[in-house]
Amino acid sequence: MPLHVPPAPAPALRSVLTALASPTAVSEARTPSLRDAEGPAVPELPLPLHVLDRITPEGVSATRLAGWRFLIRCGDRAVAAAETRLTADGWAFSHFFEGPYIASTERALRQAESTPQPYQARLLSVPGLYMLTLWLHGDCASDGVTGHPAATDLLVPLAPAPPGIAAHRPHRVAELLPVLTLRVTPPTPLLGSPTPA
Image 1 (cartoon, one colour):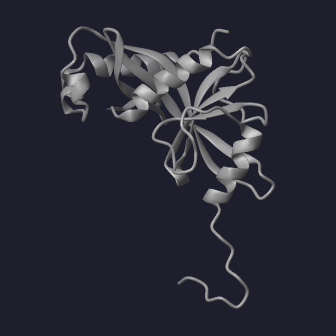
Image 2 (tube, rainbow, N blue to C red):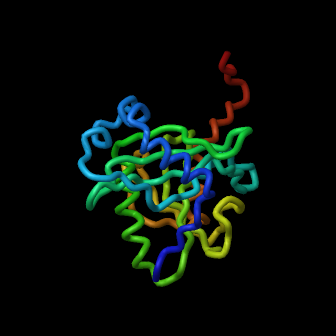
């Protein structure tokens, strides 16, 4: 089943194209693979990047859109990524980067292509765990900007994943969210124990 990738806002794409065309932006980026790439660099697969800010005591996730992430392809492989963010003046280029999440994102997207059910591809960051997941959202008609993880959506942790959470294994939100809740919630002090200063 083809994976649905929501269209990025045109200004976000334009800002990435402008940065790629700027020798200064590329040369100052901490991305040797992008600086050394031969051939044209093309932004593709724009994914809305959502951040899991908190999980309520009822287990409801509070997420927000943080930006759009584009894979930057040179030839037959993605060599870097570009991120955009929303400013007071609209969508703007933020930065280029490279690292293990580039190949891991490509791998997770290839795996998701083989799912029988259609999904919309998004990214979900869990800053408290230094974790990034491919979020397969069941509402393919959504704009990619709004909505929260539904119980039946899938989360695919990207490598490197936190200890004890398998990378590239799809988890239903209803199964993974309680695990994440336990990990990001500070333990409640026992009665009579000293409270941390």
